[in-house]
Length: 125
Image (cartoon, rainbow, N blue to C red; front, side, top):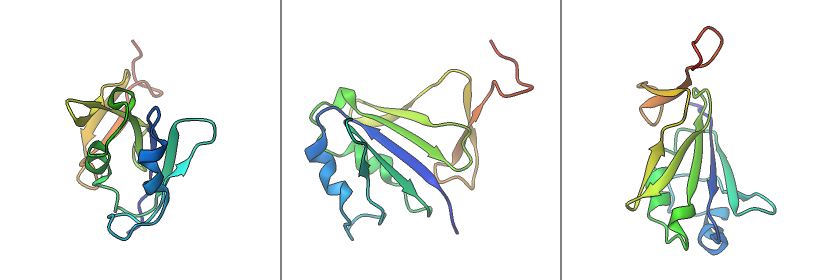
């Protein structure tokens, strides 16, 4: 089954921590590699199979030099927009975004999908 998911990691001073994720590693659940975003403390990856479900747990266990700066943007193929996760108490937790709601979805790897509430026909305010 094919499934697309994009993940962007932003973390100040984390080049050394992220470097192993830019190389293949058979011990990881996923086979794709993060690509550095030039000129930024940021990395991106595009998953094409549903093998990324453990990515948030994997990332929260990494030895971040500045944990308060870690931001993970994640958009599954059925999401209307990227969701934002930040480290809080050692766990990556989703930060509520204005004009969005996360709804249960058994097909989505996270068990839910992020929907915009301000699309055409939805009230804004």
